[in-house]
Amino acid sequence: MISNFAFGKSHRLLKADDFKAVFDQTSFKVHQPNLLFFVKKSELNDSRLGLAITKKKVKRANERNRLKRLVRENFRLFQHDFLMPVDVVVIVKQDIKLVSNMVLHEQIEAGFLQINIQLQKRFMSLNNV
Image 1 (spheres, rainbow, N blue to C red):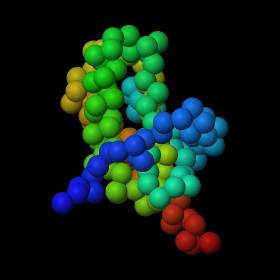
Image 2: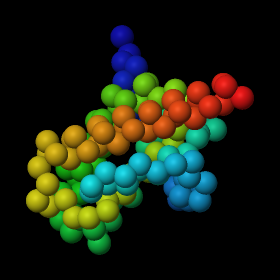
Image 3: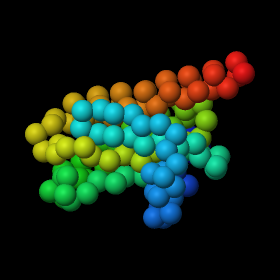
């Protein structure tokens, strides 16, 4: 049996143009203390995730990889809860070296929950018109 919670290539933003589209046509942003989520309605059937985790903000590769793993895992679990397909790009606002995995996990989870709340508000306002 194939899992519905897969995170294959179809769930990733891979090209620079895909990232640029999200940054240029952002529907809304979700702020967390260390992270910022850019969200754009997707033209595809699946939600997709892009990670823009730079060396400038997170110096050590193991810290960047740790954050990427946590974000991917949370996205994999939350992608089916979104009311509509969205493209999400996550960036780091400040260094995460001293932030524990538990705190990062809470911020990431809160970010995805907030995305869903914003989608529900937008969906409700569209249906009430």
